[in-house]
Length: 348
Image (cartoon, rainbow, N blue to C red):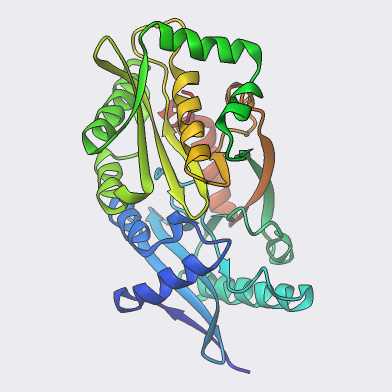
């Protein structure tokens, strides 16, 4: 049995994407074009690793290398991309016996860790595992710290009327009041996508926050993945007041970014109406679930907003390892720089 680690190139992109498509762990964020767009806009170097056993891929792992001063960093995904998870994909993970599943997973993690140590000489490693990979033990065994993270998932049953009736009375009333007041939600294209991005940037400027997700990056994502993006925009008196940028991939819709509070105060807020129309769309189009990315974190504000739709909780994991110097750098960033930087959050 021969184990090898390869770094794929553009000529291998179709094979890479086929692995992503075939795996439950595979997400839109793992797709080759999305990885290359992130590399372009984050100042990173992409290392798309493929672990093979006897020349057969048993796992893929996109890594992004950055260097800040003397600190050498590896991410999956890189920061400031509005991507909440990435990490490895273990091929055939769902169909294997538990013993083989654990063995392949551990071998992938070990070889990738060796690559991070010997080829990239990283001081700091931060990886967010995909939802389909809920076993963080190989990282604990490898000296990583492990943190649980959460998303809210709405199970779609194909009957939007029943789903609407499951909402609490106050929320149903707010949605109906918004409609009666003349607020309307439609599905847009690139023009409305740009308008929502501009509204988000303007809101952050008003709050004296730094927008860390580049507009050019978001536009490149739309141009490459427009078939996987749904733009739900709300209008009032012929003006776009807010909107939601959702992703759909396989049988799932992801509430990605947007649904910010309108710059001008409106009552009721169109936020519930926008969210409902997006969930309703997923239900009527036959999607299995609707995931609000990053909403179920430690910040109660976001959790309260997302729980209005009676979701279930889904767990995933983030793993991290750092040298002493990198640890000091990270603590300084968290305590000093991060509080003044803005991020895109659904419900902001």
